[in-house]
Image: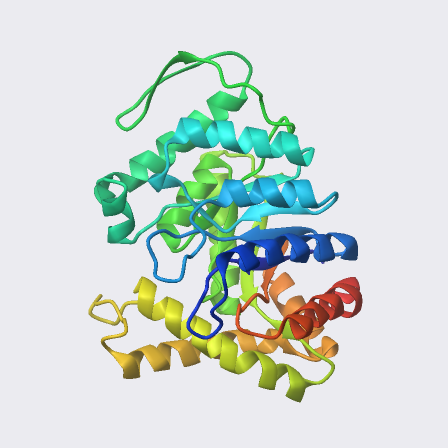
Length: 348
């Protein structure tokens, strides 16, 4: 089994009810965290995440943040999990991503998501029903923008009339990752030849099935995905003992998952109805099921090594170790990152 890369995240810059802080502190802390992780060397990427119009200030401007990280670091790659691409103007993203890639010396991994929350699309005056064509046309605009020469593109959502994007990215082939939740998004990502990021809610069997579907679809369509990466998000925490790890991580993870599941309402019941704060018992049950999925990557280094090896065996090439819960003491958090880098990653 080939070794997998491990990144860390996901920074959302939220001032939550469980851990309220001033936003200037949160953003300054991220730059310090990035420098800390950069010096650990074995951690390959640092990931941030985006949403809009949420009470706790969930980060709304990922490429601005990525530029700050680029200036603060020297080695680590900078990823988005994910920029909600259908809520953005594609040509402007092409400019911004190229600048961040130049600023970082070619360390940007551009992770793109479809978006799904009605109020985000409403807030930007975008018809949610256009999100898929905006996403697919937008990726075509990115690729043409970063190629040699001017862009001429006319679609149903975007028209680019003979303009040239400069500067081009530092990387000749800037990596595009696509958040793939479900069979159809995985097939679309394979058709595009893009790297994928798989949900943190998937079991090991589901991960294996999704990864197999990605490669099978690419083969059937004749798409070369030999350079594509398969990323998996998994929450985790490392401490000296299992007891210490669970006592630190479980309460914060429970709050984080319940808050996000309830607020984003992306889990549905057997009738297809969203499970949110208005259904607390079902919400608690959903959060408990997710915590059970992540418990194999919470504990002392030996336990986390086994958990990450199990994930690697599904065929993924990159694990985003989601150890940022935003409501734990900073020194314990930095110690968890240090143990991950020195006692876990070298043994996967």
